[in-house]
Image (cartoon, rainbow, N blue to C red; front, side, top):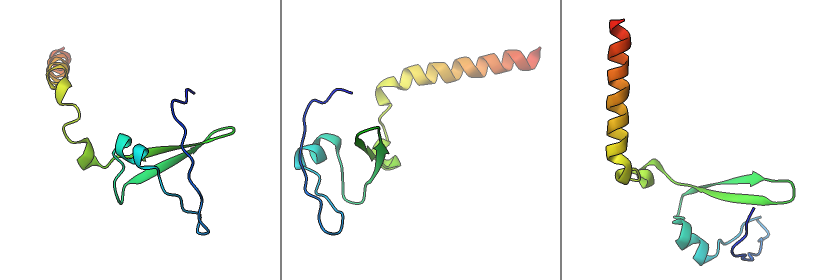
Length: 83
């Protein structure tokens, strides 16, 4: 694992932390967003989980490649159905 930056946050009496603003902005963390905690051998990794709405349009730059792949799969299925 490569660590590029490190930040420190204090845990409150209710086991809450404030995520540093640079991390919030960099990863687009928003109010109500879920995060996943992954436990490693000697560490905890926090991974933001975007909503489906946040992912909308993320594949736009690959749209033609996806369309071509779907067409190829459909043609292959038609060939197999004729056999």
